[in-house]
Image 1 (cartoon, rainbow, N blue to C red):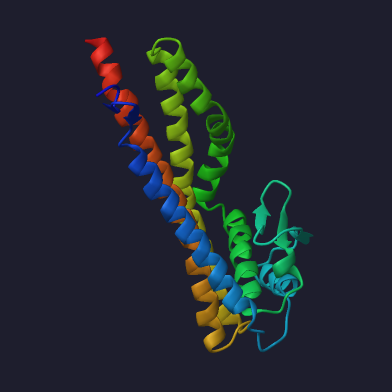
Image 2: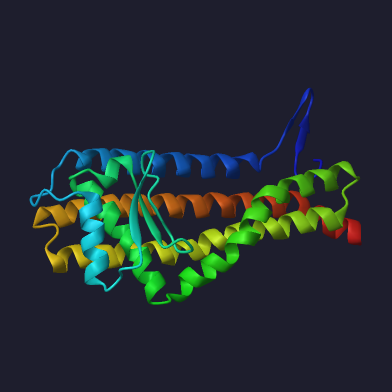
Length: 241
């Protein structure tokens, strides 16, 4: 066994790849689930016939938010709220669509705008982590690989693992932000009557499926971090002895 890898005549086997496989399968399942659920309710037109953009503007104004613009962005499910620019961007499949799925997604993004207005703490924490997360996602693996190539340089390897931990932390903080936005969205849709009857259940299923992608992403990153600790943590302790 070498650094967590087992040697057999002719090849090496790294059992920690199982963790990567589990994470990949979780992510693929969650992605397929959200696409199929969105597609299902993308075919159901809401009773009032309003578009995603109209629903977003209605929700924002009812919340007393008039400094956030609603804009169209290309792509599918690329919807997001930009707190710095005060812009709510809705994808082609949401902006002008009248489906139950489109209204649910638009309301979810409005939930983020309302979080911003109310100074929701997890949203602020997530925003503060964005720079280090972007840096960590770019440089963590190169640092680890350089550390290995330099004879298991523990300073570089540990620095890479710490930066990757920042990426995991960002994804964990993202979970309550997304769950809260969906919860706000469903309450707004129900209380305002933008969706009626079974339409609200359809929106709930769409947003629940979308939430799974964040859970799966966080789980995959945690498994990746665990793999790094297994591969390099023990080696570091042996080198220190």
